[in-house]
Length: 403
Ligand SMILES: Cc1ncc(COP(=O)(O)O)c(C=O)c1O
Image (spheres, rainbow, N blue to C red):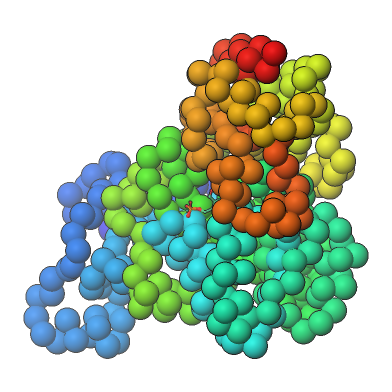
């Protein structure tokens, strides 16, 4: 490492988030490259048998095999860890891979998990259909109800899990309050920070133990590749790493390289998503066909005071309900639009629109959808970076199609 790079490494720890998002974690090779290199190789070679044995048995820091480690993935982990203020980070093949690895690493048969109702559909399915089958007890609590969290956590609980703001109803968990409840009971508190990213919200600083990301969303930011991450203390990440290495839900080097490019612009994008989403949310509030708008940046959000305390922006995702409370009306709106992409991904520069009840949450039973507030007339928009005027015109086309 050049002396200049060594000095930069120390300096970066004191720099602002946007500087860290561009430069932290890079370890220049002997080629003196400027941009982060991509190590597209499934294994690594050794100069002799002794060094190879040391790598396998004594973990001498040399890369072995891409399911176990890869320098491009390691750079992504170091950079995201700096942004989240975490001691350690492990990367996974997808966001669901990160959730799976966290639960596999930290829960065993007989343990109890408490989870908020407002989570991504596949997260609830993973717990309800699989972990419960293997002897994990699951209790769901209404996302915003602190008394319900308190009551649920009064029983011995291994792990508490939430997503905030929730997908797609944009309900918010009081992270500091639930962290206090978890700490008092010795419960691990895991937060999916995918909607806000560390630019707008830092769950570890508010007392959470582990942070989960679907890197597929804002960390990429341009809808290209799948990935996930788990962040926290070294002691809590070590078992996650052990699971990922054995199970093979590893992030690919190519995807890590794409995420590194995404992180470089994360701060700019999150601020722009927040500004544009707020403008669109305010316009939607004035529309006669709309009964309710859910957006974390709105001053009228029922938890606006809490949101201002724990986040520095509303993020890019909003949802709204139509006065015509039917699936047909929601589909007519969707089919009337044409600029926004009809797709379930979010966190892209391209605005996406979807009907959660028949897509992201479509495989859940009706009672679960009711519990989560995913009604037939709810529409989710993940606001991208197009001109707000053009997005408004597209929504207008959707409302016209409603008749
Ligand atoms: C909040 C949230 N967490 C986790 C996931 C799962 O991530 P992935 O699709 O990368 O597996 C999603 C996917 O939409 C999500 O919205």
